[in-house]
Amino acid sequence: MKYSIKSFFRGVVALCLICILFTPNVAFAAVKPPVEPQASDYLSTYYGYVSKSGNTIQPVFGVSGTGMMENIGAYSIYLYESRDGTNYTLVKTFNYESYSNMMAHNTSSYASYMSYSGNANYTYKAYICVFAGRNGGGDARYFWGYQV
Amino acid sequence: MPSIPDRKNQKLSRFDPMSDEELRAFLQLDASKPEGEASDMEEVLYVMELLSVRRKEKGESRDPYQAFEEFKAHYAPEGSFPEIAPAKPKIHFRWNRVVAIAATLALLLGMIMTVGASKFDFFQIIAKWTKETFYTGKAISGNQMEAEPDITSDFPYAELQSILFEQNVMERIVPTWVPEGFEQQEFTSYELPQCKDYHAYHHRGEEELNFEVKEWFVEVPLQVERSSSLLEVYTLEGIDYYIFENNEELQVVWVSNEFECVISGDISLLEAKQMIDSIKKD
Image (cartoon, rainbow over all chains, first blue to last red; front, side, top):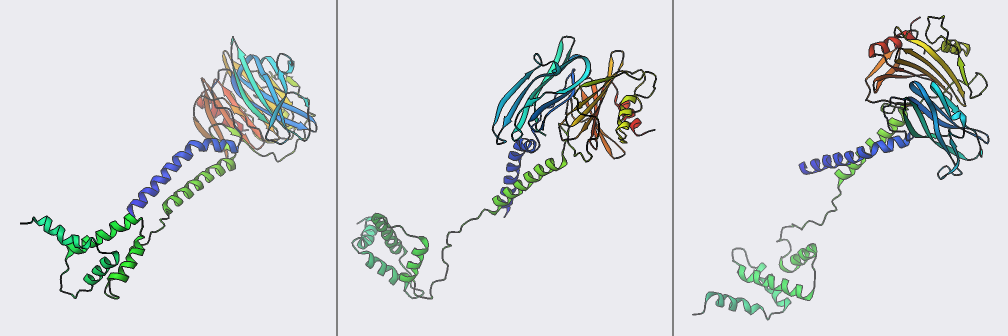
């Protein structure tokens, strides 16, 4: 009896430790995989998502700096589409050098969106890079924005 | 004089040429001796060993239970042998392992459900909520609108408050106090697909103070930069205000229905709480 109780708790502890190692991944997967928390002297908050209205696909982003920034906005946006919701294909790349509404100057925040003619029956997501910088320095963050 | 071993071997070797049936008969006869009459254990053991060796040579394997039954049948008169049958092999069902696995799975499931149900992640500050009112504001333009700061008003964030009032938003989410010396330099609002984003910027010399309000019509996680774990949760009138550090600056994040608000900048913890307190005061 003593031996079985000991082995029981030993088994529970061992399996719990294994599960704890993997639980964060599982838990976040149930929500959405976010970027890792980091500190920044330039970035305060940011967000991104993909809005769909009929065949019009709109990747949206917003960035707030810690203060007045010389450059603030989105460096790039990679738009992906999927027919089955599982397998995604890159369909459009937006760069700030080609799209003037992706980056703002001498302001503390910026938000905007792009437009793409897609398919109302498909699912979209965007890999977004946001940036804020001043005085020769800056920070960038990459993250996924999902269709809402 | 023959040595004792020789005499013993000679005595026992008489069993070697006997057949298996003769050897079993000898054992049966020995077992049937009346009580009190001693058995020659040396002979009995020798015969038993001889039978065992012969069985091995023949390649005959014996189930212990079968062997015991055969022993009772051949060597023990009925009723004279206590019923002590060898235990049949038990299927040892490891209940402890089953319970351990079930407990772990239940714990894991509970943790997953808790994260999913809470819709708020402490460590990532990804606040989620459900929009229960519909959008009745201006047409979506996505253009940045810069409003001139109202320098005649002593009321900080007056522009934001007036915009919210115009939209019939009675929610008290705007601070009515900022630390002395901070002056508003910029106010911007962004009308986006399924979101409205407002941002006010104050400065006091080199020090900066930001106040953001996002009005969400869908669930979108807001990423908040931070350099430490949660400093404090300041609760006021049922709303939790989460206070972090982002390097040298302070970040305060809270959710009120469809509004997600952030105060960030070069302010102390006390000043942050004072700003929070001013939200609910007239």
